[in-house]
Length: 315
Length: 315
Image 1 (cartoon, rainbow over the protein chains, first blue to last red):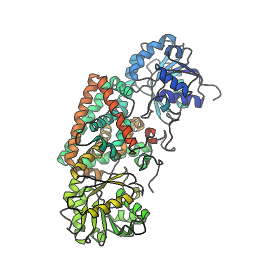
Image 2: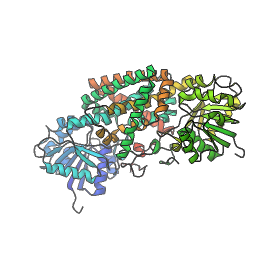
Image 3: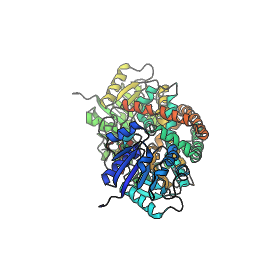
């Protein structure tokens, strides 16, 4: 486009998501100026060394001055404090959004702090990897991923439209959703899978009849698929648990009930029940691949050896 | 090598593992002749169309005649029946092995059926993908993977040596292990991860407040990593559950205990306990990558879109 989408964008927090945003904003020329803020001087130095923005401010309030779009990319537990800090400095008519994995809590923390003269629209790009920090980001992180926006009643539709257009310019598909429903869906598709992955890796860590060396050596048999999720940022995931507690507990309790039934089928040697479950789940994989949400390469395209090329197909 | 390792190799079962063996045996010229057997005429036709062997026999007893090496690659529940069927036709001095995921049960099923004049050495290549059938195999499947042999007391060391050399020629690293210990280790690194993956995909399938469409649409947030394991062959996994019941129940019970503690930490909002677990598990991932058992590419190297190239690194 000939004109920049926003005059000034302020990125509060410059980890995996914030730094990916900085990269795609630069690539797509979506802002006249990008101001980056992090509480940590070290992180800010790292962002500057990577040349991710035009200006760097440790003070978030300084960073948001005259910004037309403010994107808060911090662990969800810090959302309220950031909102409180930036509120007095926000420009009239600015759009304020976030990228947190839980929405009910972020809205409850941020909305009361923000002035009426800004457009607050909570959001969540469903994108990420197990890596953290400014150097982990990349410009294509959001491509063909969903970004869910959960605006409250009464938010200016033009502002929602503008924020959606921004995410679409970053490569995402956008969707509006009720924040409570968002939290239930994400508990299932993201939070509980991460907790289960953390849990089994933790279980393995504590066994006495199987050594850690054996777990690592033979992990390619299935276990390693869980370790990727269990390598995600601990602070982010602690906050997710604390801030989407009810939906997570509900899903974990369903999962546990089903696991009890599965244990019973194993104990009783009920081959028919096992076969039925193992057949039913197969079709979900097919649907995910058809929906373009995963690659249909055997074993994720991992070659036998760690170092060799990825993507060797069956032949 | 100038001389073929074996005169005739019989492959009983020609699914993912059997057909990968056929391909690597051909590539490395490990046999003078490869005879392929499958109970299913359809599968045998598929193997013939793929030109995987020199001869094709629906009757396993016919296939093993004069074979120097017999590799049984069938669901573990069928091991006993296959052993009973081939026993009378086996050549004196032949090596008989299998590739099953459970070893105590396979030994209990096969050893009593086989004549004393063959060398029976149960084995398990820790290699596989979520795909099944003769067309799913590929010659490099075993490269840099472990193959565990669990010979009983009194087996001729020269035969063990010869079978190890065969697997090494297929690209594997070999290891001798006690069958009971094998079953415990595999329950942890393979069987329970698969069951948990099947379980959560099953849970998702039955929810009323989150639709299947939503699960599929938003699966990239974590859930999809489980669906790969949950797409594995149902017959094989039913048999694994029935034939490694005790070790699986023991590991599932540990996992459930830990999950109860994790649920309690979430319920109580115990951020410290959550952070500790999430930090501890991170180092396991690092060790697995250092051991060459996985690739250190963010998100398994999956690009944002399903169809695009794999292996885009952070930049």
